Image 1: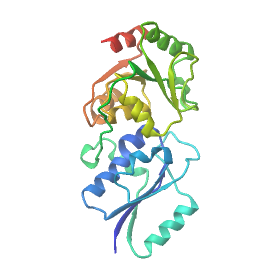
Image 2: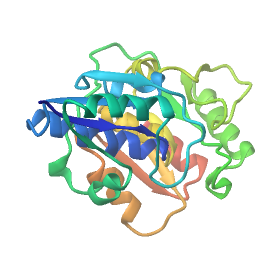
Image 3: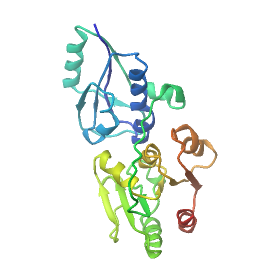
Length: 254
């Protein structure tokens, strides 16, 4: 009888999937707590799981939520019933992330850093999400920020999703709705990753990339998360609070 960990599809915020969800299960597998790990993910995110998951299934999230949450289809319920017949199966759940988000000893990360030439001076993620729209920078502000970088002769790329990222009609390379493996390639080809607090900025941390990240959140909580708690490889983080475009460009140049 095998001891198997099964995790369902995670549909909470992307940053939490990056910095808490998959790393919990990788650590359990590495420590020998389970003989095998089986689970479900969004197929474009498979790079996060394929190094340690024995049976990986795919499903498209119906809709992501602001809270830690998971989703189980009837098909995966039937799969669980089948493997439970002859194995000792433990099912993970989204509440596990709440208990473990700031306990580094229970996580195992792998670095997605690549030794490649730099093609971009900066990769931007311009958050434009329908949830918490008050956290989005205005389209005009974001456009001016990128224009300032271009005016200085910088080569720029944009990453993100078509539903959650501001699109700009500017001479930049765009990588929207790409598998994470391709986004990781782009991040590694950039000197710095730039954007408001969001999931892709945490992906940059897993690539050991230098970041320029900002927020309207005052106090040290979010700063500590970027600089320490969710920075497993100690990449350089330039954390700013309510910066101007000039402030950001100065840090990029520095």
